Image 1 (tube, rainbow, N blue to C red):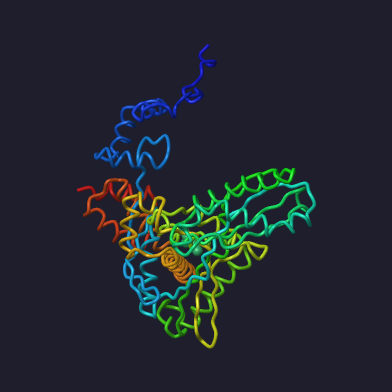
Image 2 (image 1 turned 45 degrees about the vertical axis):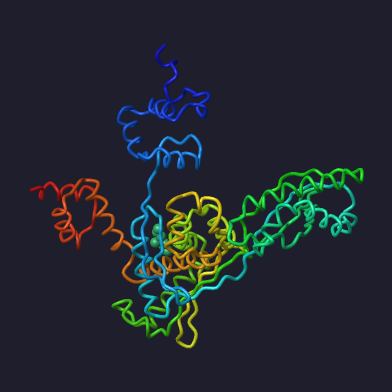
Length: 440
Ligand code: MEV
């Protein structure tokens, strides 16, 4: 019967990963109304240079095409007295424009000030042990010597670069989970993000710990070994400051002092209310992620660390803070961030490589200052707009441009639409209607 026939979508494609790329594309196209068009479209996004395409295919798995996101520049960003052309990869309109405007504004007021608080990364070996806890604690110095010796081959190169394993701590969680302990290990991975280095060391630690107890006729259960993306001690602080009278003119209705006070109120709200804090911090990550992606770093890891840090006081709150003391306005972002400027995608992705060159081949700590600066710049721009003319005016201009592009407007129609919609609400239907009447 017709109803019992499996629909295309219900069919399970066994062995999909083993298919050739062309065949994967064909198999997937069965789910599309017009397979021919779909295949042509996706192929249209392949690089004509097959070697280059192969490189992209191999970043991930089951790749059938490339998905492009705009690569923009925020020019003339002044950080610690140095000017950067900052690459930003983001699909959301207004973010690069907002960051650039904020960078220009603060560039005229001394620029952004940044310092890296520390660069320690963390890894964890989670294990269970049924023996005596005091004995385990007392064996730690001996265990640590064995753990370090077992990873010597891996750490020697990192030590030459000034990094390596910093500290190994036993943490007793047995009151929360029976027999559960963890080794919390801190690392300095210099200019690499260090995930592979950390995970390799930790897995070796697991084997070493098991062998150590086997020799004593005891067992430990190694539950897992993995880096932690929470890196509160790999942290950067960036701030801007100026006398409040230097903020005169930011808003047509408020003098500098009144604007500063309203701005501070908006930041304070994001400290007490998690609904606002989430959106506020999202705006910060608009800037941070764009740089993190442009430089081939892991934005999921970066965000995970930041959001955990935002909840460090027991409730989720703003990552930025604002102070006004003696008529001096200071706006600060402090955030953990584990970035790399060597290894991983930073050297494999051709554009990530160029981004790093554009930034003058920064060290990982320097890149932390740049990414955090764009976070602060975007947050300043967003909160400034929200507390003055509102966010929609700027957004709507971009929204209008997007709709005009979608509807295939000519340059002439675009210019006319900009004038027409200056004081009108932009809707898709409204723009369609406008184009119908201006289609010469
Ligand atoms: C939009 O991507 C980001 C904002 O919502 C941030 C904020 O509200 O602070 C504008």
